[in-house]
Every structure is written in structure tokens, then in C-alpha cells.
Image (cartoon, rainbow, N blue to C red; front, side, top):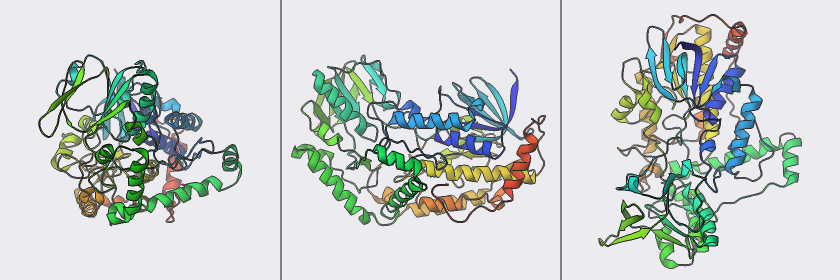
Length: 530
């Protein structure tokens, strides 16, 4: 099978990969391919189709700044609307002709002689000057390690791989997990089961903090105004952005500043649950913010319903038809079930694609991460891996705001890196170990006083060594400022240009565009709408 030469290979067609494709295309970097293991764009919003799936960040902010949508139905939009938005943006951008779906990356190896990434996929091999990885942190479901779960004879599936062919009516259903997905699923299926004589068991390891979901449904007049009043939607987005940034000091500096949020969460429990014992079970024993703060008005009433039980005892095993738990006093209880739904999260600290990427030294990125945890320079580049760029890499996650803002900031950095390579005829760019070490040492130092480190919980933000390799411990506007332009002085560069394939008709135009753009000074003033 022949190897296809491309300038840029992008992995993933979610918010990150699509943003990279659109912006490279705008820069005249037309020679790229996006490979996506799924059958469509959308990433996590394509895959997570469970009942009640919705975003917990306001949609005015959880969308591209360059593609505002005046037609959101409500402030926190449901999954079908978000997926439809991503598909529309992709179709209107004119880049889908370079997307290859149903194609998984099986290996990516740096070829020093060619100065290219040789990327093997399930549908062919590519040799690319740059490799841009945007697989998303919530793309690979994590199944619980419970004895006997593989022997369960009923239906079992992960929340991110919802089996819509399974009829839950009248069934005995168990949900393992009480995270962001579970609190959306539970109210939906509890209602269905209540109407059909079924029963729901919810298995909780750690109680989450849940504040009210201050939902707002947009009226036709508001949508009309967003569409036709100049600057109105932009102003709404900006107001939401800065409102969200007010959460940062409570997370990163002084957890006591979150007292109002804690009061709201406790009031949410009292409002939603009548039973004192159940209230006790759902009240967290750690600082608010240590784990992701969730939003729901319906979760607690669902737990308080007659056909729902919350189980906090440890799961000891799963049999062919039941779940067996063990109480603190050693007492075992077996509960019969027909359907098992696991809402146990994703591989976030162990980045799956890192196992398939081999750098110039011959070791995989996963091997490097195994030494001291997943880490990157500015969350984007990694020593030993020339011309490799993450979109949503280590320590770029947020607990308060929109990841689309982070994505656009990283894509701007990557664009400027590629412009710099074009203008200076660099074959490769690779961050120095010194820059990498200094960046991550400062990042981990800033992590120490945060609620994620001192809040008294064990969360999916932390890796096996207890190191937070997931979150960004500063404001998002500081992240954008630090990535507003490519700092070539922090990189080792190879000046010899690689052997290029025959130029396309657009190559001359693309080079002119890149040269012109690279000489422009990046704006110092931050605009959340750009």
C-alpha cells in the first residue's frame, strides 16, 4: 500500500480537530488530512447520546468564537443541538473534503531521515510534516475493574456507548457512578422506570457537589435579537466568559471563596431530598471544587423517588444476574438486576493515543509520561517529538469554563508555529527540555494551593501518583496570553527544509499567505470572541 504525503495530519474530528482544520485552511495550509475513528464529526458529542445528555457550560461560550449560533434553544444546550452545530460548522467551512472517517490511528513514528511523521491507520499510511493530535480527553471510556463484571448475563454498556436497542421499561436497572454523565442519566431513566414498574439502583463511591441548574430557555425574540442586533450575542458571550472567570480564585487560591456555591449546593440537597439519611449519604465530605462541580435540579428528586435506591456500600463483585456489595461491618447484600449501566468516566490522565506515538529517540510518548506523568510544554508540545502538537493536551483542562476557549488558544499557537516554520524554512521544531521542565515545574508549583490538591478528595484530575496532569491552574485569559504567539527561542529547530512533494496549484498561494500572516504582530489585547 502506498504512503500518502501530506503537510499536516490531524487526528480527531471533534471541536479541537475541526478547529485546527478550519484555521489551517484559512491560513492557506490546504494540504492536510483529518483522520477520525468515528463515522462523523463531533467527537464526544457524537458518541455521548445517553438520555439527558447536555452541556454544563453555557452554549453562548461553549461554541466557536468565529461561528456564533443565535439559535440555541436554551442556555445549557442538549447533545443533539451541539452535535448539529458542529456538523453545520464543518459543512459550511468547506474542509470536509479532507476528512477521512472510520479510520483509527494504529501507530505514528517519527522518521528522522524523512523528517516526517509516518502514521499508520486502519485505512492506509500517511507521511506528514506535522502531526496534530486532538483525540479529546473524554473519548476513551473507562470500564470499572469489578470482579465478575464480564460474566453478567444481562445488558451492560458504558454511558458513552449507550445501547438504544435496550428497552428499559419495567426493568431492574443499576447505574454505577455519580459523575457528570450519571446525574443526567439517572433522572431520565428513573422517570421511565417509575412509569413502567421498574426499579433503579444507583451505586455511589463518592458524593458529588451539585448546584442548581439555572436553565434559561431562549425566546423567539431573544433569538431574533441575537441574529439581527449587532454585537448583542458577542456581548452576551463576553459577559458569560468573565462571570465564569470569577470562579478561578476559589479554585486556585482561596477555597473559602466558594462558600456561596457550597451554600447553594447544600440548599439543593435540602430542596430535592426529604429523607434525612439520604441527605447524609449525598452530602460530600470534601471541599467543594475538589472534584468537578455538577449542575442539576432533577438528580436529587430522582434519588428520593420510591423506585430508586442509592447504594454507598463497596461493590465486591458482579454475578450473572446481580451486584453484590459489602458494608463496612462486613455484611454482604445481593441485588438482582436486568441491565447494568456504567458511568465511570474516561481515560484522562493515561492518554490512550500516547501509547501509539513513537518519537525520535525510539520510545513512545506513553513511556515518557510513565516517568513523571503526562506533561507538555504549554500543554501543546513535547520534547523528543518534533513537529507534534496537542490540542487539549496535559494540564489544559478546566473546572469552570469552556474548553472551546482553550482549543482556540492552542490552535492559534499551532498556526503561528507552522507560519514560523514556513517563513524560516524550518524542517522541525521541538521544545527544549529546559523550557519543558521550567514550564511544568511552575505549573505544579501553582497547583499546590489549589482546591484540587488540598480539598481532601481523590478525583479523575489526578494520576496514579497523585499528580494533577489534567487541569490548568490559572485564568483562561492568562493561558491565551501565554500562547498568543509561537516562542521559537524555546525550541530546537532544524533549518534544512524537508524534501517536498510536487506542489499543488494552491501551494504558491498558500506560501504567500503564510509568509504574509507570519509577519503580522499578534494582538496583545485579549478578545474572548476571537
